[in-house]
Image (cartoon, rainbow, N blue to C red):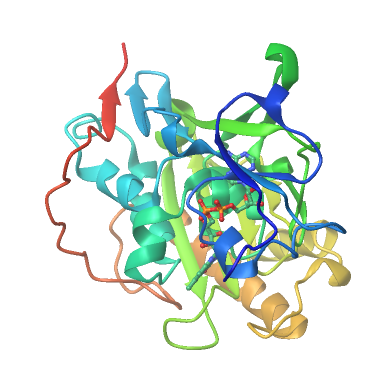
Length: 310
Ligand SMILES: Cc1cc2nc3c(=O)[nH]c(=O)nc-3n(C[C@H](O)[C@H](O)[C@H](O)COP(=O)(O)OP(=O)(O)OC[C@H]3O[C@@H](n4cnc5c(N)ncnc54)[C@H](O)[C@@H]3O)c2cc1C
């Protein structure tokens, strides 16, 4: 896509430099696909390039994991097998690879698109939104003059391609707390076609070994998170979905009709309830959806993707 309205590409991470007609540039897989006329009433004039930010992609510490907004999908995919994460009592890491795989991405998208770009694009099928919301991620957002605020990722996306960023605000990072990473998790995803975009993506977490947190994404225009004291009965789960997701919140596009997304949400939620209610490693459970064999990873060239915190 030609972006022939662009007059300058400015390497910066300073929100004070942002002005009308600017867009933050991360991996560029959306910006360069949609073109400079697709991001508001007026054409884009400048790209504020995060490519030289130099932010460490992934930082692991006892408190959890910090993902820089500029962390790529390829860098994130390596995390579960990294020396920094290995041996941590964090079953939540099992969500990282299925969520990365949910991109069903080309080589280009896999290696250049970023976690932050995915959140900020705010598509219902954003798998980094699913991962970070499902693990109670908290986004740090920078504004001009050194301003900074935090927002739970579950509240960051407010609708189809809508989020809570004010013009010029910069998503800096996402913190995934150790408490959520320590929970048992279950993942379900469905697409209408083989290698298609997610139509329904649900993540379940069993906090403290007993309390269910269910995060619904892709089926809905924005993430919906349901929290239960303990593990609900089937009818209680269905009633909570009735209350938590009005019909008009189900997304409607080429990747699935709202009625199908709704039916599959109830089905996958029940599968997750059954899985997390069964002893760990139980067999014979219903598991609808897409799961992928592990990828062979080439060596990471050139840059230090991970760092270990205190
Ligand atoms: C073939 C193909 C398949 C795709 N499949 C999927 C899919 O299955 N699901 C999905 O969700 N997306 C998909 N995408 C869209 C896109 O690749 C992803 O959403 C990707 O994660 C965007 O990241 P990026 O770094 O390339 O963003 P960019 O293109 O650099 O930026 C996207 C938007 O986010 C803003 N932005 C980026 N970083 C920040 C930041 N740190 N702070 C504030 N604003 C920021 C930009 O200004 C821009 O408006 C696909 C794209 C292609 C081309």
